[in-house]
Image 1 (cartoon, helix red, strand yellow):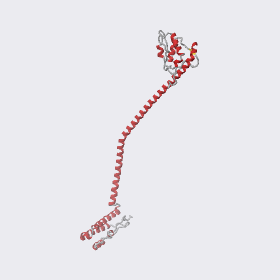
Image 2 (tube, one colour):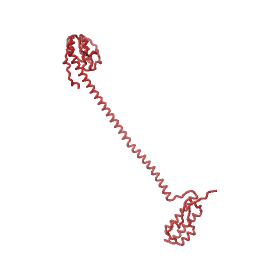
Image 3 (cartoon, helix red, strand yellow):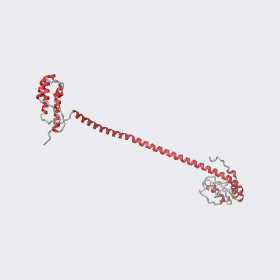
Length: 303
């Protein structure tokens, strides 16, 4: 057994819609004759309600035509609107569909407009983000390159400064080494005055940086041969020729080879020239070994 169909909304009577309006007697009779009845929620669907509502609207319209201003246009519009409301309620009950009202149409339109607006807004936001990204990416890349280049330049300058500092430290250390060697040699010469008589001497510290290899080769006597003894190894400052600084050792100045070996090690000619004989060369070397004034030093010279 099927469930009876009922109305899901109410529609008042035409007369109750205008309680302040005094209906003409002829129109009142016509309304009663046309069955101006109300519809309530839950009422069983009456197939005559649509016909009755149209009849009421026709009667009001006819009264307007025959009576003129006695029946205002608003009353006619209300009757026509009520007939539409009855048809909508009837269709809703019978067919399960609702005839869209002005309000539902407006809501639907607002929903559609809002949806499209949101979609447009999202699309605009995406386009704006893409535009900003395209504009900022090159700037970011240029900024990164400038930062990288600046850091590289700073690192280069720091490396150059560090190199300069190391050179300065090396130079200062060298000056201190030379000053220390001259100070030591000054006192060694004072002791060598007595020792030299027995062909002994306190070995001097190396006070001239570098190797004397080329210097010694340039002072080889004619018809003599000399094989360099130290090569490039004797280029460190303040080396000594013997292990002990305080122990006297024999001095080998009896041969050209021994003298050239001293010249090569100390990188100093001892004022010897190429044409000097062995006797002259020996005297020049021993003269330096006992001359403390030759190694006069200034305490402040190293700074």
